Image (cartoon, rainbow, N blue to C red; front, side, top):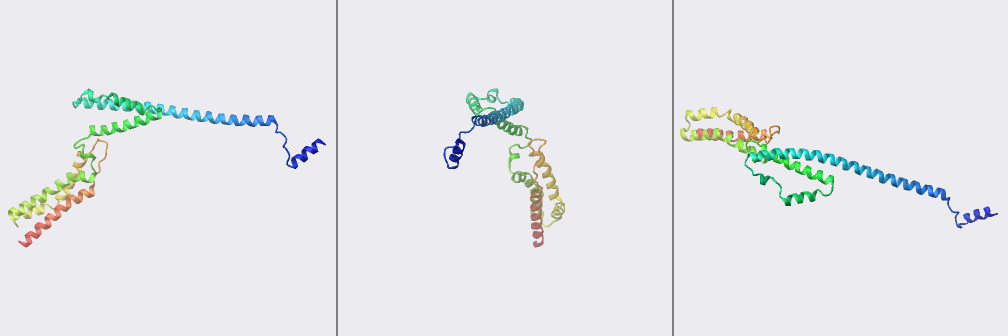
Length: 232
C-alpha cells in the first residue's frame, strides 16, 4: 500500500524520493578528482614553461655576455673609457624592475639586449661608410653611381667647349660610348665594398637604378654635343 502511495505521489507531482547518498558522494568525488587533475596539469604546464624560459634565458645571457665582452674590448681599443662602458645605478635599477615579473620577463629583456648588441656589432664591424650603409639603397648608391656617371660627360663637355667641332671632341665622343658600362661596373663594385656592414651581409646594389644613372648623363651629353656640332 505504501509503495503505491509513493508511486502516486511521484506521478501527481508530490515530493521526490531522496537520492542515494552513496551515488551522490561518488559524483562529488569524481568532480573533485577532475578539478584536482586540471589544477595539477595546469601547474605542470606552468612549471614546464618556466623551466624552458629559465633555460632559454641562461643561453641568451651567455650569448649576450660574450658579445658585450667583445664589444667592450673593441671600444676600449678605440679609446672609450671604462667608466662610460659601465651601467649607471639608475640603469641597473630600471633593468631589475623590468625583470621582476619572472623568467619570461628576463628572457624578453635579454632578447631586447641581444638586438641592441647585434646593432652595435653592425656599427663596429662596418667597413667604408658605416652611417651611409643604413641609408635607403637608392639615395645611398646614387652617391657612388652619380659621380662615376658624370666624369666622362664632363670631360666631353669641356673638350667641346675648348676645341669646338675638332678631332678631340669626336675622339671623346667615340671613346665615351662604352663609358656608361664601365662606370656602372665600377659603381657596382664600389657599392658592395663601401656599404657592406659585415662581410657575410649582402648589399642591395640596385643594378637597374645604377645602370639608368650611368646611362642618362652619357646619352644627354652625347646628344647635346652632336646637336651643337651640327648647328655649328
